[in-house]
Picture 1 (cartoon, rainbow, N blue to C red):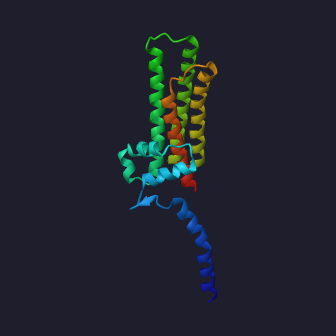
Picture 2: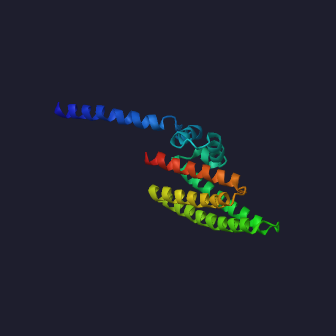
Picture 3: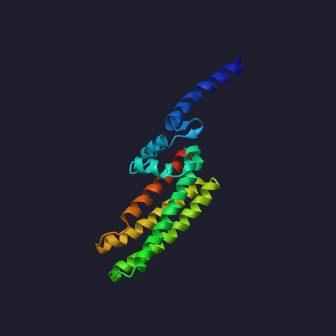
Length: 189
C-alpha cells in the first residue's frame, strides 16, 4: 500500500512538469517528424526579432527538413548559416574585384568585412562541430560570436555614414543565426 501511495505521489507531482513540456513543445511533432510551421512559431516566441516566413522558407528549402527531428533541423539551420557566410564572403570579394572605383574608406570597410565573415565562417563551423557533439552551449556561444563579427562589419559602414551594401546578406545571416540559436534553446529546454 505504501509503494502505491509513493508511486501515485510521483505520478501526480510529475503532471505539472508534463504540462510544461507539452506547452513548450506541443504541436512541434507530427507523425514522428518536426512540424516546421510550429517550430518557426516557437522560434518567433523564443526570439521575437525572427521572421516566421523567413524561418519556414529557409528550413523548407532543404528537402531533408520534412523528415528531420529537432537535431536534424539544427544541423540544417547551421549549414544554412555556413552557406550564407560563404556566399557573403564571396560577394564582398566580388565587389572588391569588380574594378568599380569605391572610395578608399569604403574599400577598407569591405576588406574588414571579408575578415569578419572569414572569422564568422570559422565560428559557424566550430558551432556545427560542437552541435553534432551535443555540446549545445559551445555551439550557441560560437554562433553568437559569429553574429557579433558580422555585426561589426555593419558598424564600420555606420561609422563612415555610408550606405551598408550588405543589408540583405546581413539580415539573412542574422535570421539564420537566430533560428539556429532558437533551436538550441528548444533542445536545451
